[in-house]
Image 1 (cartoon, rainbow, N blue to C red):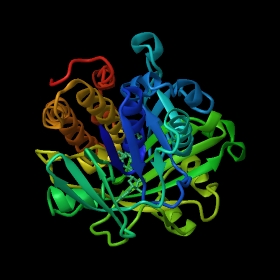
Image 2 (cartoon, rainbow, N blue to C red):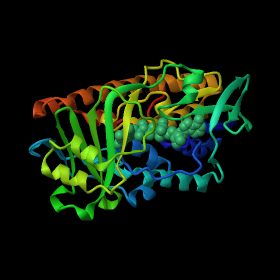
Image 3 (cartoon, rainbow, N blue to C red):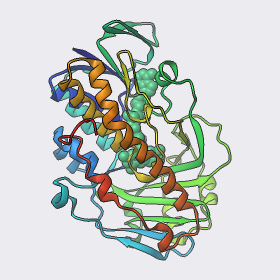
Length: 381
Ligand SMILES: Cc1cc2nc3c(=O)[nH]c(=O)nc-3n(C[C@H](O)[C@H](O)[C@H](O)COP(=O)(O)OP(=O)(O)OC[C@H]3O[C@@H](n4cnc5c(N)ncnc54)[C@H](O)[C@@H]3O)c2cc1C
């Protein structure tokens, strides 16, 4: 079986690793001419690390990942701690850790591992323009006019998925009303009390910050509301005055962190969603990750769900007699869980917007989310 993946992001690369491990030949087509460091962090909850460790990435991730000893919810204006959370020992509970990482460190670990187990499988500068299911194969047309065929195509082309719009639903992404700024601060430039994980809330804004890359960098994502957003892309440079002004009512510590971000290295982007899609497969093409079910970032589970999709889809393809059976089992396995996460992420965002109190922030039960086992759990439920 010859499988092509459109998109070399978190979902596409995990799928390539999982299929290769299952003995299925795969090619990943990524539109970018080189994969670049976009300067951001990512949280990998145990439901994601369970898959990544199973795929052999554990040692590479542990070279740079950080496991926070504690995390705090803080009042935006005073900086006072509203709630202090000491994470459980997830290695003991689930056998895998909760990690925070620089995104590039994650992506690099995936690319290097794929190059070892499937040399040449990742093709850059390959924008998939058109897919056409023709009986038992799919014709793939690239942006430069080249043509290839595959038995199955997995479209993992992200939230702005053009393939989803062409093959499944023309409905465009919808602006969520949130705008985010992200940046990295050299931890050495910060006083010790600011080198920790915290989320500060209030006045319709919140800022999540945490350490990455062996604690050498502090990642922040600052979110505010807007009525409209017209700019495209997720790497629009943000002028320093603009985001300092936006968060000027936050406590001095938070403002210090924002002001220490390297000049020109803070980026902004609008957060988008899409109407829920009931069916993610058509003919021999199937959607995965944000292309299938984009979710707001407030649960820290979008990438984790793309990683789970990858593992489950690889298991379905390896165990089922036909692509149609595999896709149906994948859909049944992933639809309900990703829908729930999408709804919860939206609700979490709303909770973050009010005046922060211990009561308004209660109610998180992450262990339920983290227990999900995409590696060995039952399929179809
Ligand atoms: C602010 C923010 C914070 C987040 N934090 C977390 C977090 O802490 N934890 C977490 O789990 N998730 C988090 N997420 C969500 C996570 O980043 C996404 O869910 C995840 O990146 C989705 O992976 P993907 O592979 O589906 O899409 P992407 O990572 O977007 O990858 C899509 C890839 O497809 C390529 N591509 C696009 N079109 C084509 C084409 N036509 N042909 C070929 N290639 C194409 C793109 O260049 C890209 O490389 C966060 C998201 C945001 C916005």
